[in-house]
Length: 466
Image (cartoon, rainbow, N blue to C red):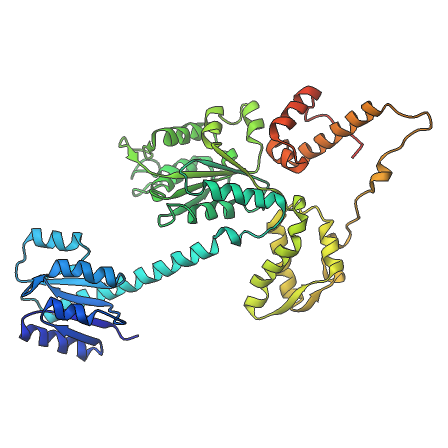
């Protein structure tokens, strides 16, 4: 698209020279010698990419007009022209939003070099805004697929807390979409125009993780050949996502706790304190309460992170969402790539509904991507599924669970035994995460904790009943 340029300059000879210079480059150029005339030119559908504005015009202040122009054409860049090349004038112009400040007389080639940089900057700024809009669209809450009660409860909670600055702890098994939840919170918060920085605390060796988090100074250790900015500082103003926080070494737990409490830290090898304004969202697939009890995780850090707990349910607890999720991933991996996969047969979906999904949504996504390649047309039938998905057996019927002897049973003892078995099974499936187990059993967490204590249940207890 041909760049549109506005020139507001009262010296007719310079105005003509500027017009010719831009016209030779094929730009669309509009010129004016006064502010009032320029205001008329910028009304209506006139969209400009760049403006060159003299600071001292016959009917007003060019910088004041620049502010009005930029409010109407927010994506346009402005270069201020002036015969008074004082530092004060240059500072004032740039503070008000000018891209550059040129003192007359100037070389036209030098000016065109500045113009090129301004237009590149404008292009990058526009692309950045479009990218941010796309991120907002991608991570809107309605992009988190699911109508089940468990996932709707999660969405209701994160929508309420997104605009706060409270620290959030996202809990759930691997593959449940914890980072998707974290990104949705960020891009729907007041920090959305600032960075979202993610780091997997379990994927980086402990001896390197401190430097990754807090940065380091040149010479701080072998291989530190230059200064490096850490993730905390990179996320300043935005959100830092600490994935797999439960894998942190105790020494790093102390340093992260201090950074959260004091909103500051020292890079490795530095005595200078760096202040930060960061919202932290942490995630874990282990039971941090249990880790605290076992001395593997600091209690004070746990409570600092667990201001707003969000428990993301595993896929096996939201089987009613399976058809929606399948259709969602088909849209991504089939139709958007020119393939004709239209869905899964009822028999295939019924079989997938019986599967336990240890890899959760990530496993389902991988399956849909595989099917979109191996079965690019029509419906995926039961026979098309990999063997492990075809061999699912329906759950045992309730009437086959119980065996009442002819002499009868003690009802209260039987009910108590069955309740113990239900609770233990839920705890075993969730790795003894009481929040997730309570969600699975549709109990209040406090109710479940009271039952566990009252019954004296322990991780090493087992039952054959369920």
